Length: 222
Image 1 (cartoon, rainbow, N blue to C red):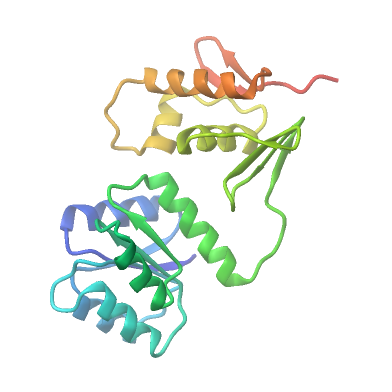
Image 2: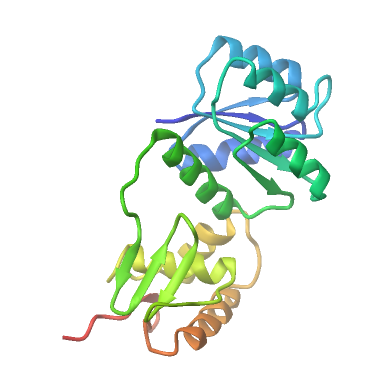
């Protein structure tokens, strides 16, 4: 169980992040400002810090600088600022990565997983191989016959979901919850649209429809 400190001054976002990470198996602790974050960091042990830049009392850069004086704990910055200057300033303080608001919850979880894996020093090959397909969750690359596929973030997440559990059928409701977030209230047909585009890029039939249920990775032919 990995402990994650979430430093975010907007209560709704902080609570949403805590709920989502808790549901993913992490142990989140929230802080509403920079002073509270540093107090928690001094009294508890965390495996990763999810740190907003625009904070009351002490901003994210100041919090990061103080943390780095005593620890190399992984830091993932949340920011509404996507300018090069802000990002370079963060990397100059040895943060591990940025996530720009608004962000995808599944992408955020994937970044957290990769950062924690890197911090743990594990080097196992996490690539998934299925027939002529190879996907790498760490680099988010997909190869077909050794050639890279140009996939959107959601298309990659869909393909990764199917190949991670060959034979399992995923309903549209499950895919919406898993990839778009449990608070998504859009049309379920968005799943069909993304799968149609993904199938077009794969050329071959790697994803099959289970009528009345959902989708799964197509069975391998002997």
